[in-house]
Length: 224
Image (cartoon, rainbow, N blue to C red):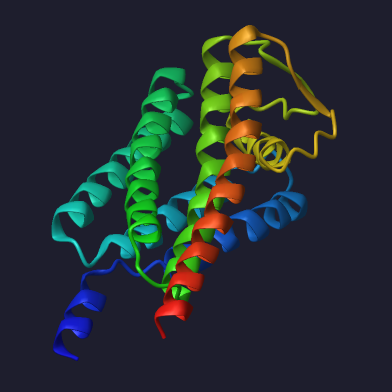
């Protein structure tokens, strides 16, 4: 009993991260529709708040917790400077800091899901978090490419550069699930390569994840 309790306390609690991601993906578009695409400050605050609460998913590990705080603070500071000074350099630095934070969370979640010897709610929450984070992290890549190489995408994109991240979050999940509505289309070779890589990765992730969870469940059931 003591060993099981110690093992559980070492696991990072993704029950903080999952609601934060769901709130970001559901509430933020509603706020955009209510207040309009010009009010970028609301979207910026909502996204920054979500990242701050997401740090709680790393609270069981002091090293990763401090690293997460550093990445999120850098992202908030650079994004605030980008909005105040209308600087694309600060915007790219903000995207890079947030990108590193999301990679950190994804790597920790994958380790707990892949190397777990049983299926529980914690592992399922981590698996869902990874899937949602994949969509968000790819949206950052699309956003970055469109800033560095303008015209890489065409379609239903906001005129304000700071509001285009919301459009790319939508486009990323449409691509991740291989829906492909066609309202936003990649034009450059780099953008197209990112698009088909995300589609392939999304399908393989679901197939491998489901197969792995089923395998773990069957193994535990046979042992019992």
